[in-house]
Image: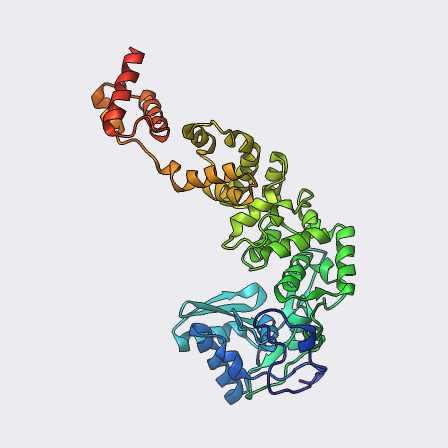
Length: 443
């Protein structure tokens, strides 16, 4: 493409394969690959994404449609990693193209007029098509002001060089368009911004840098680390809304290496810039090597050493939804309650009394974080067994036996439940006997 420098070292097979791990130093080529087989890209997707890809490819080849695969999918194609999502840029009217695709493929389209973008949904898969645009940030941390632009403009607005490449959809193995040295940075295993003010424009890119570094097994470049430190020192993170920070946390929480990403972000000071209390990675280190983790586990690990006031402040700063706020709050409660839970002579009913009403996800996460075997066992038994226990007798049964209407019914049911948990009323007959004792006691 005119005006866009190319780095053409054409090879026939991928040399940056990550099967089994990140590229090793020995696997780096002397010059980066710059030609990608579109058939290989197509082989990594299916369903609605494949249908959209094939339609756009036909249009690009047969009609000269100026449409390009951009960003992460190009990076992943160079690394021989299947793309999870395909993103396209059109130097034209993307919403109109998306509507045409939806009609052709029997899908639906959602238009985002402010950014000139559209999402096509086909067979349950969502594909973004963007009108090439330029962006200007009015002030640090703000949302950008958008205007129509060229492909060069669109690539220049992106976060890192490895995400600022494009692949034309015409031909069999087109050359990668790489104006910012992304191919060489892939070879060097480097995460680098496009310009010195990138983090100041959008401080959330600090967490993205860590995410790509840890996911790919790369290193953030020295110059980019210096830019990151400058952004932190100047306090630009404060200008970013809690919603935008939360979205970056959500992305990290769904990564395979979320623990490593969060620990690295703490090491760099990026998390404490979001909230000053996020400077302790002890909770996260306890999750290292643990499988089957989810967002609640990572959130609980971050909250594990916070005070109640800091936990509430974090929830406000990130504008957390109510379920995540409960995880933060109750993880702190559970840490403070742990000494009581570990009492060796504590009855089961007393343990349940300490745990009833707390968020189950917080309890499950606290079981993973605790170093006390007795606490771990009791938390897990509570989730798996004890909280499911209930008396055989109902409120109607109690009324029929002579218990007064009103609060007394609830009191008796709770006493029955405690007795059942503690093995003192294992059958309905034993429950009835206990109810009669309670009635006699109250008369």
